[in-house]
Image 1 (cartoon, helix red, strand yellow):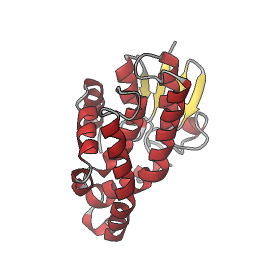
Image 2 (cartoon, helix red, strand yellow; image 1 turned 90 degrees about the vertical axis):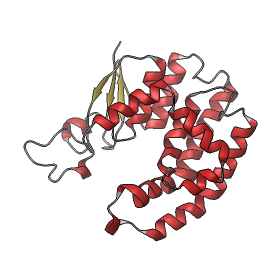
Image 3 (cartoon, rainbow, N blue to C red; image 1 turned 180 degrees about the vertical axis):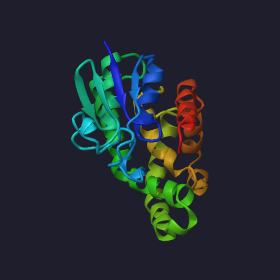
Image 4 (cartoon, one colour; image 1 turned 45 degrees about the horizontal axis):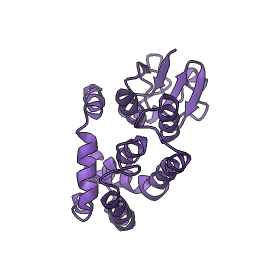
Length: 220
């Protein structure tokens, strides 16, 4: 059986690669790049990208990552991780129907309550050149994330430093990869010490470190 992950490492494919590393899953990575990163996606020598017909045949939405798991195709990074954890089991997977619900809840919570704002912090505090940054988006993101960070901080305090089940699971991976984008806003983490400690612990794991090294080795 073969798992193929479509997506470059400088994308949300990091979530899937991290989980695959944790599970010890062999996989092939097809480094599809985001079309917006290319000066001319239509150029004859352009690399495989998200609007290329060959990739649109895999994912007609034109987003990364996608997977092909022995013929079964799935899109959306958070859903992919929930599927792979459930399929392969072990301590990272939900251990009950209730934990299935919690893992889905936290994935949706992260995507809806946090991700737009954490991405704005990452882009407008760090990634973008100064002339492209919008301070008003930073201020709006900081205001919007104060309450979700407090919710997550209480959850981690009550859960022994984990999102669910008193142990490290796929729910932590999915959420940590969303919260990671907010790292430039140190004031959010200073106000939520359990979140700060949890993210540091997640990112100290060998499987994360292996994923991150591959990401850093990839051209920006």
